[in-house]
Image 1 (cartoon, rainbow, N blue to C red):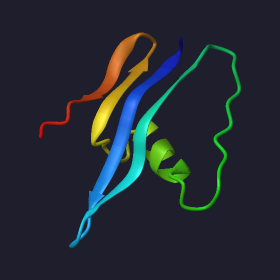
Image 2 (cartoon, rainbow, N blue to C red):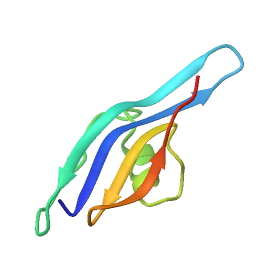
Image 3 (cartoon, helix red, strand yellow):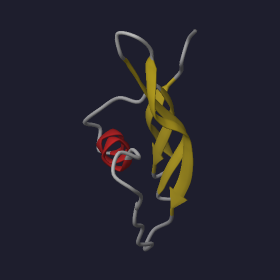
Length: 77
């Protein structure tokens, strides 16, 4: 796999509760593959792309590029 997304989550804290923008996202993209991320407004597409690009940090999960850990976050509760 060229890029692997394993268990990626993103949670935001609001004054009253936690908001789960992404929960346990997992997929892989092989070299030469073309991938589209589609869904309704507010489902987390831009959040996921920002995390993959390294512009935002996930709350949990792992991102691998070329077999190397690009971003690895462990959630501690």
